[in-house]
Length: 171
Ligand SMILES: O=c1ccn([C@H]2C[C@H](O)[C@@H](COP(=O)(O)OP(=O)(O)OP(=O)(O)O)O2)c(=O)[nH]1
Image 1: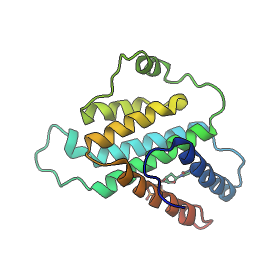
Image 2: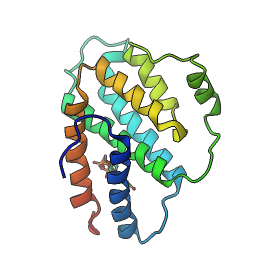
Image 3: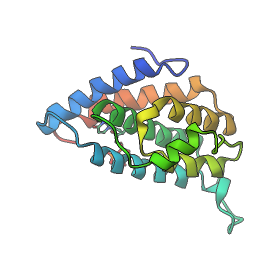
Image 4: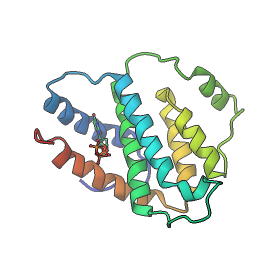
């Protein structure tokens, strides 16, 4: 299986479902609790934000360079859990209704400022509208000057690692 070149959400969901099945087999469970996926998502968003510290941290001057590979790997982890949540969520979830209505009503525009994107990324807990999540991530990549193709290559490598290593009994 090859890395995708652009966001094909249907195919990404299908590949994520294959991975989640392996995790379920490993854990001997038929379902993954969406609330646990949401916690995992928030944890990964935090790791992504941490990697981007040189971009938003206003009280420091002496930063080490951003590690592009590590940063994109963390964004890939966010994407894994965003897709997994969509695959495992049943029915409507009203957790972030306000955020969504703001998005849908156009009150919140996708910003050209990375620090505003990061706030939006952590606010998106209701992934009913996954297309908006992908729009936002597209914008983040644009703001980081990274192509979808480059990011999707890293995502594919992480997916393979998850399929081959993380789903092993011993991990
Ligand atoms: O049901 C699941 C469970 C996990 N993952 C993936 C998402 C993510 O890409 C990886 C877990 O993240 P990571 O490898 O960062 O976490 P870890 O196993 O805790 O490693 P580390 O301790 O190095 O952060 O597993 C899924 O896709 N579905």
